[in-house]
Length: 176
Image 1 (cartoon, rainbow, N blue to C red):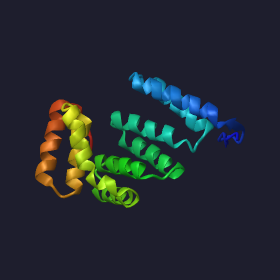
Image 2 (image 1 turned 180 degrees about the vertical axis):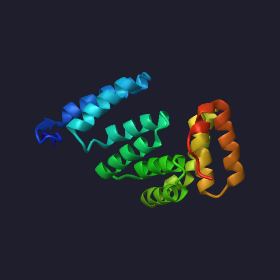
Image 3 (image 1 turned 90 degrees about the vertical axis):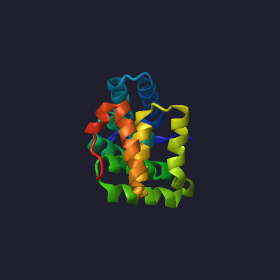
């Protein structure tokens, strides 16, 4: 069965073309060629505004560029296109980075409601750090998760580890 989506201008376009642009965007992302990745992902979402995967990857790119507002916008578009526990969780991390701790907590609550295994997110970040101890973003996200759980001392220690590895993370807004 042929799947179709629509351009914003109303013209029909095959979803497969949007998926091809997404695939190219993901490949450019893997090569750390973010401008090319953004171009392809933008083409994918122009062809298929409901391409949740393209919106989600675009959100990750914006987050890496410390553009939390754009990351938030793209993640919400992904959530509207395809609600899932993982997208709620990712949106919670972005909300936390923006300094909106109540919003982050609400998104984490939605994620855990849909997938109770996410309640153990801190163990996932810890496992990631066991394998890759110098992964600054994992330290940062673990810090946000611990802060959301009320574990301030552990949270502060993880923030400090993240900043020691990647000093530019100090510029990211963070909940107090």
